[in-house]
Amino acid sequence: MSASERIVSVLLDRIDLDDARFQIRVEAGAGEPRRSIEREGQIVPVLLQATGERWRVIDGHRRCAVLR
Image (cartoon, rainbow, N blue to C red; front, side, top):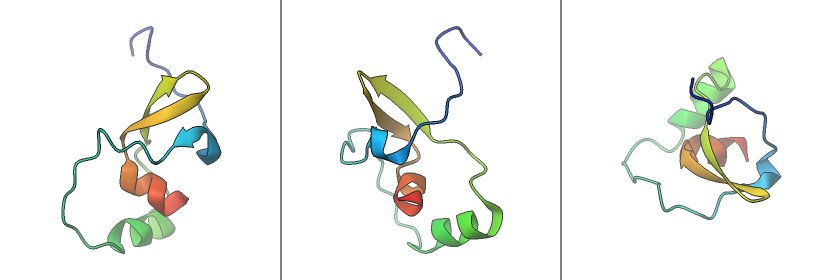
């Protein structure tokens, strides 16, 4: 892990979920991520970028939507 990478807990209300500039749209079953998270929990962390006081989603848009 580089000096600029770290693992932190971020509240959902601090994440700008409307910023979809890095979201790649892939057709998939809408319920599958929800069922997976309900069954197994969130295994892969969401990748975020700090933007001042808020955070931007780089990877994990669907996981954030499910957890919202």
